[in-house]
Image (cartoon, rainbow, N blue to C red; front, side):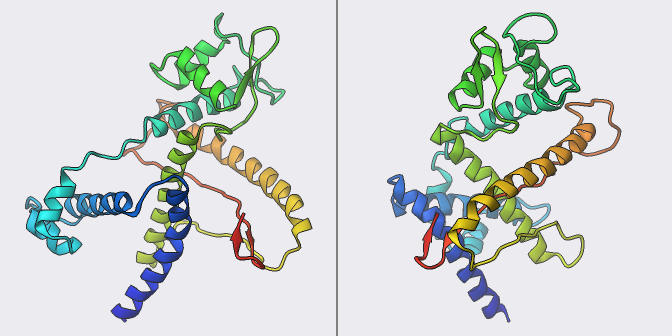
Length: 275
């Protein structure tokens, strides 16, 4: 049984990393670089998550767990940590500001359409929005970031107009790659949880058909985007009422992170090429 599980995991990982390898090759990243990243993560996870309670994890034990030589464990442990160039921080900061703009009635009145904001002014301005939802981040830096990735624009009278209701960079490869790491890790963590639990499963579903005409896809993409956006905005409103950053008075213990992700995919089955 253990051998069958190993083979099943190997096959799943081969499928999983195929689009990742395509991304690496497209961006000129050779196998050795990927290998060092993988080894470094193996060592980090083995050190932090597979120790013996009450005992400091030794390099020898990490070597046994990972299958790497002790010399290799020491080498990769000294490698510099991968740098996402602040992409995840910018992603979180921009997402919080945009979420506040969409759901806070001070910036989005009963009409449901977020206000066009002056940069400075009274309590209803972009600087105040950033102060409320992005902490001590400079308002000018947040604006430059949102303008750069195409989620806001300047109007003729100098106000700032929100173009998207969620943070999806249209430009800026660094930001898109940062999202790749965060969102893919969340999905894999959900699957890993469900593999090892027979109860308390996390929600994990998808709908897929494999004999669709090409002409059906534009309509499905529009339908999926509209319905998914509506669901996510509904869930966002509920979560914001429970989040202590937005409602410091919410009672309860611990500090948990939770959410739901939705993504669209398509593939040319006849040609075997990804779209």
